[in-house]
Length: 109
Image (cartoon, rainbow, N blue to C red; front, side, top):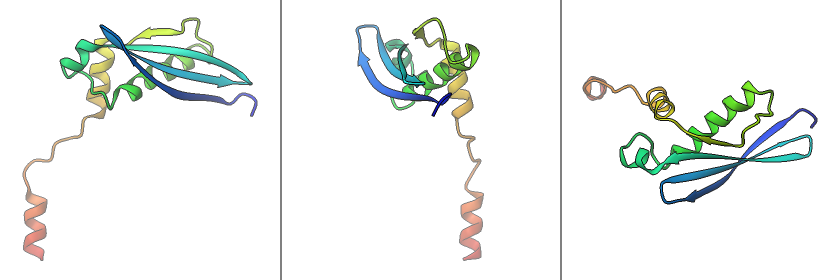
């Protein structure tokens, strides 16, 4: 198990102006705790959904771990509007135009 890094989502804490998401990173028997924050206004403005928030935070944490050889100096991060927009754009399904596939299936039936 040496060298293996495990990232575990521990939950969130609602606060006055933000939600704080906590992750535990384990490596070689050492546990570190990281907190990532998303402003409540981001949820109200629909820049983030409550369901996607842990994944958004996880992506940021994974990027920080990768950029610092799994040992970032900071343990608390703010998720930016740009990060939220990037996540939403990369995870938005492409809309299907019309019901031509449905209509074709009905004709073939």
